[in-house]
Structure formats: C-alpha cells, structure tokens
Amino acid sequence: MHVGRRIRLRRTLLGLSQEKLGEALGITFQQVQKYERGANRVGASRLYDLASALDVPISFFFDDMPTFGKAPDHKTQSAPSGGFAQNRKPFETPFQTGTASVFSDQEASLFSRKETIELIRAYYRIPDPVVRKRVLELVRSMAPAPDEDTSP
Image (cartoon, rainbow, N blue to C red; front, side, top):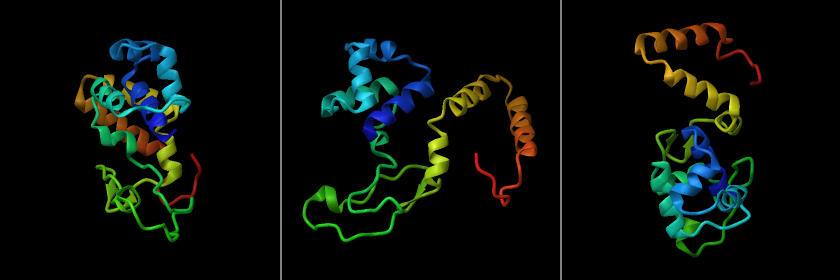
C-alpha cells in the first residue's frame, strides 16, 4: 500500500493521469489504479518500469516507509533478528538526516494533498525566477511565524 501511495504521489506531481501512465507502461489504467490502491502487488520488473516512467530511483517508492518493529509513535520495540530486510538501514533521501525524517508525519502528509500539488505546479510554471522568489516571500510574509502553534 505504501508503494502504491508513492506511485500516486509521483504521478500526480508530474500531472499524469492513470491512463497516460498506463500507456507508458503498456498496461490499462485499471491496473495502475489497482497498484495505487494496493489491491495488486507491484513486481520487481514493474517497479523498475514505474521508476523509469516516473523518472525516480526505485528507492523513491520505499522512502518514508514505516520500518519493521517500530510502533506508530516511532518508539523502538524489539524486532526479531534474522533476515536482511529486518536489519537493514532505512533508505535515505535528501529530506532525511540519519534515520529521522526532517518532516513530521503531519507535514509529510501535506505533500499528498491536491492543494499542495497544485500550488507547487503553479509556482514552477512562473517562468521568471525573480518573480518566483517574490511569490515565495509574499507567501512567507502571510503565514504565521514558525513558533506559533497552528494546524495546517
């Protein structure tokens, strides 16, 4: 299910429909839909094809994945020792330092919201970098200070 959510996130960030992604992969949009919902498992070769079509490394689909043996509040529990998968270090991304994510779970969920994706797309459609910077400064000036406790 996590991999499916990551497929959907990247597809929507690129502005691709399920149909367009399906065409790129040689499958139906219904199959893409099943992958995104987690109804069907994504095999290794299909994951490779998805990574190529969505222009991301394969590790992208596993970023921020809950690790085995961790409770939802991220307090460590004893995990059974054994195979590589249970003992491996988590994949690291530019948004991570060590094993702690830079974003809280609440902040990370903002990146899957339609409004956030639309805002990012509109921002990067502004051709002039100076104007983009001014828009960013305007938005920052309108937002409450970081130390003020407000919910998004």
